[in-house]
Length: 364
Image (tube, rainbow, N blue to C red; front, side):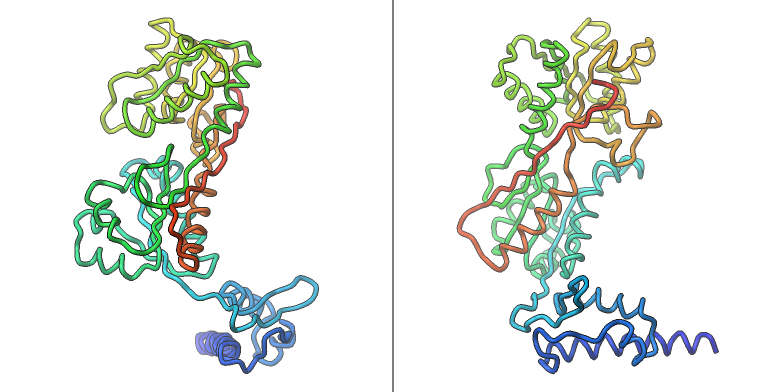
């Protein structure tokens, strides 16, 4: 008996939402007309006012109605109703600890997906192997999307070759600098965070800096951009030492950072440190903790990423002074750029840069 009531209730709600949607789309509910209140619709349908509000929120998400606080819910002009699009997304998610992967990598995909849904559009997940192998399924998925948002880490030669023939908007999310490729791009504006970090070092009277990174790729790119920014701001080039070592296999960076920390101590390098990754910074702190060094007193460390702000706190509480990597804002900007390019095709390749900021904590 209870089950029957639940099904009946769901059917009524579905029917009401469908009727309202159809009446708006076929013009029976004129543009600008005010819909009955949630309470009135609840009385007519037998549903609760809470459920009616959910239906209205869904219709608003679809762009069919406009809800104005204190005034009511109004039908949107049919000509202005937003067309639904399918946005393909492709991100490289590495294997590893769920917490580490979530904080550093999946946040991009999750933020892109939630933005697409929030704006009332459809998502098409494009697995990297399908694109890389140029499979029939990959081609069909790509063809089904009205635009593509893809991480730069997915751009192997095979995928680049495929996308050069993709005649729909393609937006690449960057980790550091823009690529010399004919794609629209969204990237962090590193200079804003770098300038704030360098000013912080200067306030503390620190002019010699150990710049920690891995060799090659994103991290070296960040390190060289930081050094260039520092020289531009008047730091002497010889006071900026790039500190690198042999990588550690199957390591996100904490073990590598520990090696770097030991290297800084044994080679008596500067304990004023800029690290291109929070993972490296975790390991550096491990090495310094072993010999009893206190953050902000015996060494100054500024990192990049703010993984602690994403909930990855190996020391219990957020400890590291860090430059934010605004992953959610970048993903959101990439989706919005892709959607805008569907409706206004451009002969130019656009680059959007999202500012980074400095968060002060104990290490500096």
